Length: 95
Image (cartoon, rainbow, N blue to C red; front, top):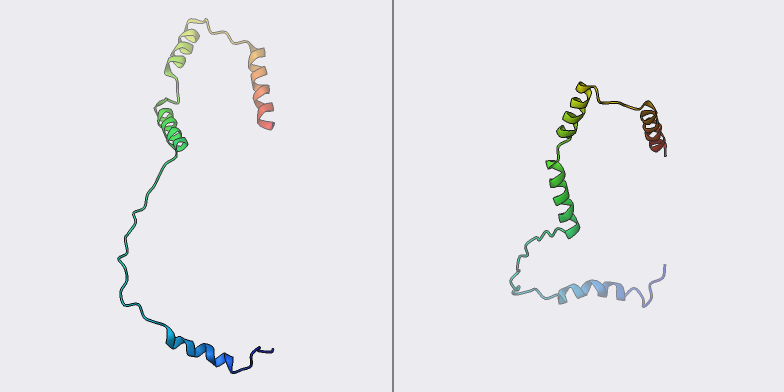
């Protein structure tokens, strides 16, 4: 390896450290506060999730209606319609 300018320049680099001046006074450091901002889309999502939590998993009015129709004997199920819905759900799961 060849050092351009000769070896006398290499020690000169280390002599420059004496030229460093110390800082006498520093300016005041202002602290910044962390800020969290929520996007409008996230706010909308949060509103929808709160509304969905209020919706019951079981629609009791539908259950009561079907139970009443079943008890009275007026609840009639078409077997072809049930088979079609089962096949459709199986096909949709595979796709």
